[in-house]
Structure formats: structure tokens, C-alpha cells
Length: 565
Ligand code: NMX
Ligand code: MLT
Image (cartoon, rainbow, N blue to C red; front, side, top):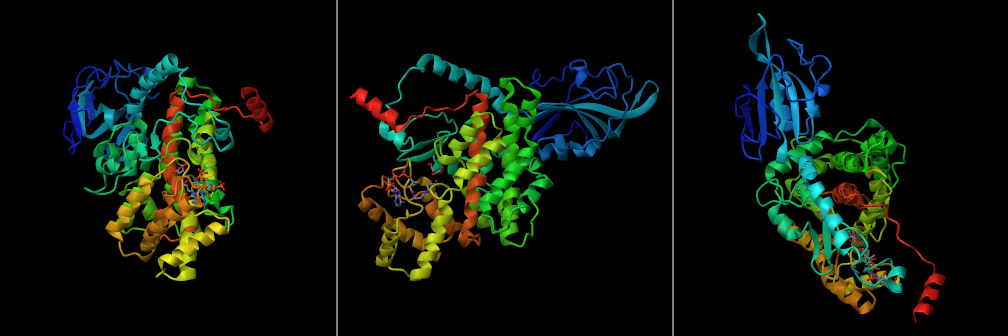
């Protein structure tokens, strides 16, 4: 392969004679392609690059640098670049940033005459990752967003957003605006918007595995982090980057194995996440000492590594508990969600599509929900993303939050056990009332913010109508949609009688064979890492401070109200 050759449709390689600084030479190809510049040289090959960054084995004064050692090109963020570089056999990365990588390599096919002897051609290859690279985009965006926040604070810092009532203080801060959360916003009637895009808009705009398919969660990750809709190449690059980060250290599995196999899957999963923390880049960098302006960089590394590694940890938990510990290795040809489904043991193409949809829609739900808020709170103490996310998982494991998906399927299964599958509307009503009268909530219904049917429920319903319209459990879920809201309304106190995301997810998974309800919240957790990880990066990039709201006692409230009256 010759360096001047155009490789595939994406890589443009040009011979380049003088300055190879990619920042100064935006010459090859379009910006949404990865541009590669090559420069040949036997000596004085580093006029523009700091020598301190070169391998110690050679310097600018060397007439003929020794061939660089063979290095694993796994240091590259994308397997595409690895594939591209492999044919040159021996290459060494001289300098690597997120926006470009400068590589010294020896071309085994090309010999040059120099100082009277023949040697292999050495070349400097500069790969500009440019817009293919998420980190580079973020780096460009951050100063601008920091300025926006500074301006907002300076110009509007004293503007009131509402009154805090005693009710709000007593009732779990409901309706109190108190958090900055950039990645998504929840409207009580419309539902979630990810960086301004509704779920149907995401389904239309985000790249899919095949045309017309469900969005790839990698695309959503890109959107949450940058606010921009990525193209397919960018999403494929991100898939490859996540794959290259996905290796889970052995001790994580041993940490999970230390728990009884009967431990709840969420306990095993959270334990695995805590074990992953051993590799935190943020913790290492903080211990060494780093300026506040750099905090976001190791947070990025940790968040991306965490997101990348969770499917392996989560599927290990599943296979350990339910499949006699028979682990299925990752398939690097698959995207993030499809590979997760594959490692769990489900390869039906429709299940892969379901997993893409599932991971996308569960990823983020603005900042005030228990899991996201917990991560934000813990992260505000500069606890690293692993610690923050493990804390979030423990909140997600509660039945009023993420565990509701487990509760819904168990509740429906117990209904079927009691009344059979051909249940009448009256039987269904009786069952709902029986649940309420026993002091339990109807799982999957109601919400702290939403006041209409959750659009996440609606898109799952549409998925079911398309792929499994005759599934008996789907039919039951549809009947419950007719029966439950009027009953909850009749109860008088329920602010939102409509179904939320958890009312639907279980029956879809069950249809494709993933029927172990106790495991469902782990799937929710894997997905939630995408929203939480993205926001943690922005928390650190924007320099958000320690979260520390004021609390008061009942006595304080009484005295205050007496004085105010
Ligand atoms: N079944 C029975 N009672 C309910 C329900 C329900 N589905 N939803 C709300 N209520 C009750 C609630 O318990 C409260 O009763 P009380 O005054 O006796 O304490 C009353 O109605 C008022 O609650 P709301 O203000 O409507 O709801 P709140 O914001 O406090 O709670 C949930 C929101 C989601 C915790 C609540 O609706 C619920 O418990 N739903 C069932 C569990 C569930 O599906 N959770 C999943 C939420 C989504 N997620 O994935 O996290
Ligand atoms: C979520 O996805 O986090 C739930 O819908 C709960 C919430 O938003 O409060």
C-alpha cells in the first residue's frame, strides 16, 4: 500500500513537503473525512515538532534514525486507523492528541539511498482526526460554553426562577428548579428532548444500523455530548472507539464472583462498577495534581471507558446468574447495543433493534431523576465517574425508580398466574384495585414530572405494534393502558395516571427471550451511563461547583412561617 493511495472512501492521503502541522494545513479532503498527510525524510525530519516528544532512541541530529520499535497501534482511537496503518508493520506514535496523531513508520516496501547506503524509507504520517473525533469537537466547544455560562451568571445571576414553598421542601423538592443539566430537558406534557430533539426526531435523524432502523446509541452519545447530530461515519468511529476501550480487567469479574450468585443483579452490577473504578484516570490525575481547567479530560476518559466497559460487566452478571456462567465474547463487528445483546446471548436481528432503541431511550431524563441527580451530586465532590455512577446505580435500584421495570413484569406475571392470559377487563380492574388496596403502587404508572403518557412508552408501543402485535403480554400491556389511568384518576391523589417507560419495556424483552425480570434494571443502568457520563464531562468542563443545598428543620419552617405571616 502506497502512502499516496486513497484508501477506501474515507481516508485521503497526500504527500506533503513542508510544515506538517495539521492545524496550519487544512488541505486534504473535506473536514468530515479523516485527512492524512505524509512527509518523507531521512534527517532533520522534525523542524516543527518538539523534540522532547520524540522517542528517546533518535533525535534531529541523527543521520539515520534506527528503525522504531514495533508498537501496538491499539493506542489509536479507531480500528479504522489501525487497519490503515498495519501494512507498514513498524510504526511508533510520536505524538498523539485527540485531534491528530503523528506517527513515525518504516515502510517495508520502499528503500531509499542516503549517505551512501540503502535503508528503508521512514515517513512521518500525520493523521488528523478532526471532526471524526468526539474529543476534538468537545475541546473546541468547551471554551465557548464556559463563556456562555460566565455571561449567564454575570448578566442574569440574580433573576428569580420561582418561589420555594414549604410544600416543595417537604415533598422531595418537586417542581423546584435547582440544577443545571445540559444534555436533556423534560417537558411535563411532551416528554424528554435530548439536546432539543424529541424521541421521534431522534429516530428520524440519528444514524441507524440499517436505513429506517432504530437509532444507534453511539449517535445519541455524540448528540448528548456535542448537541450536534452526527453522521454515520462519526457514529461508526465512535463505535470503534468504544470497542477499543471495552477491555474489562480480570479483577472486576473476580469482584462480582465474590458475591453469592443469588445476589440481586443490580448489586452484582454495582459491585462490578466499583471494581472498574480501580482504573480511574481522574483519580490518578487528581492525585498527581492537575489544574481545574484540565478536570474534564480525565473525566472524559473515565466516562468513555465506563460506557464502553459496562456491556461486558452487565452481560457477565447475566450469564453468571442465569446461564451457568457461560460467557459469550464480544463481537467487534457489531455496534454498541447489538454487541451488548449478543454478549447477553440474544442475536435475533429484531432484538438487536430493540436493544438499540432501549439503550437510546433510557439514556437520559434530565438531571433531577434519582440516578442522574445522585451522579451529579456525588460527582460535584470531584468523585470520579465510576464512583458517581455506582452511586447512581444504587438509586436506580429502588422500586420507585429504575427497579419499576422489574416490578412491572413480575406484577403482570402474577396477574397471569392468577387470572390466565385471556383476562377480562373487569378482572383486570379488580386486580389493579387489589394492588392499590394492599398499599402498593401500580408499577409503571405515574411520574414525578411527566403529566402525559411517556413518549418512551409510546415508542416502545410502536415497536411492539410493528414487530410483535400478537404477543399475549403486549396485548395485556395494551389493556392495562385502557384500565389503569381511569382508576388512578379515581383515586384522586395521583398527579399523573399515565404510563411511564417501565410499563412497557419488560414485555418487549420477554418476547425475545430475555425474561428474567430481576435483571431488567441492569439494562436501564447500562443505558443511563450514556446520559450521566455525558453530563459529568460537562459538569467538569463548566467547572460546576460542589452541590450543597440548604436544609432546615420542621421547627425552623414553623418559626419562619410564623414570622412571614
Ligand atoms: N400507583 C399508586 N399510587 C400512586 C402511583 C401509582 N402508580 N403514582 C403515584 N401514586 C400516589 C403516590 O404514592 C402518592 O401517594 P401518597 O400521597 O399516599 O404518598 C400520591 O399518588 C401522589 O404522588 P404523585 O405526586 O402523583 O407522584 P410522585 O411524584 O410522588 O411519585 C412515582 C412519582 C413515579 C414515584 C409514582 O408515580 C409511583 O410510585 N409510580 C409507580 C412506580 C413507578 O412506576 N416508578 C417508575 C418511574 C419511572 N422511572 O423509571 O424511574
Ligand atoms: C427516569 O428515566 O429517570 C425516570 O423517568 C424518572 C424521572 O425522570 O424522574
